Image (cartoon, rainbow, N blue to C red; front, side, top):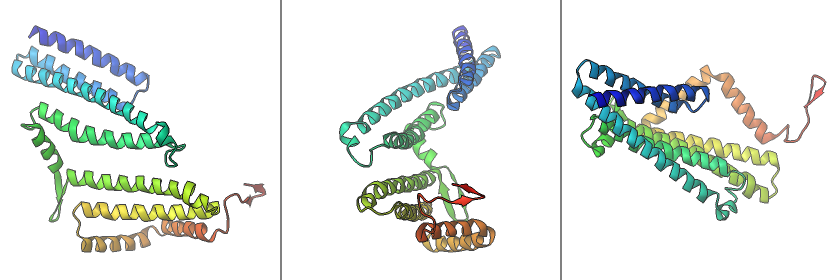
Length: 275
C-alpha cells in the first residue's frame, strides 16, 4: 500500500507540474488534458488507499500504469510513422511530380491527420477501453466501439457508419484539392487557358466533387436513395425560402466566374480609390 501511495503521489506532482508548464508554454491542449486526467485518477487512487479501498486503488493504479505505457508506445510508433512518411514524401522522386511540387507540407499534414485519426481512433481507444475492463478482449472492444450509435426512426446510425461517412467526405475534399491542383497547374496551364477560366473550371469541379461526396456519405450512413432524394428536395425548398441571400450570392458568384465581367488582374475604381 505504501508503494502505491508514494508512486501515485509522485505521479500526481509530476502531472500537476507539467500540466502547468504546458499551459504557460502554450503546448497543444491535448497534452494538458491527458496530464490533468492522469492527476485526477492518481488523486482518486490516493484517496482510495487512505479509505482502505485497496482493491479499487490497485485496479485504478494498474490500469493507469498500463494505459500510460500503451499511450507512450503509440506516441513513439506515430513519431516513427510521421518521420518515415515525411521522408518518403520529401524524396527526390516524388518532388519531381507535379502534384507534390510546392505543396509537400500541405500533403504531409493532410495525410498525417488521416493516419492519426485512424490509428488513435481504431486502435488506441479500443485498447484503452480493454485495459480498463470495459470489454473482455481487443477485437470485442473494436466491434463494440464501432457499434455504438442511435436510431433515427427505423435506421440505425452507428459510430462505424459515421466514421465511414466522414472518411468519404474527407476523401472528397482531398480528391477535390488534388484535381483542382492538377487542372490549375498542369492541364489548363499547358493549354494556356486564361487564369479566370481556370479558376472557374476548378471551382465548378470542386462543387461537383463535394456534392458527390456528400451524397455518397449519406448513402453510406444507410439512407435509401429514394428517401435521400426527398430529403434533398425538402432541403432545397428550405434553403430557397430561408437562405435566399446566401443562394443568390452563390449563384451570382458562379455567374461572375463564367461570364467574367471582371477578370483576374483587372483594376476597379471604388470611391475614388483603385483596387
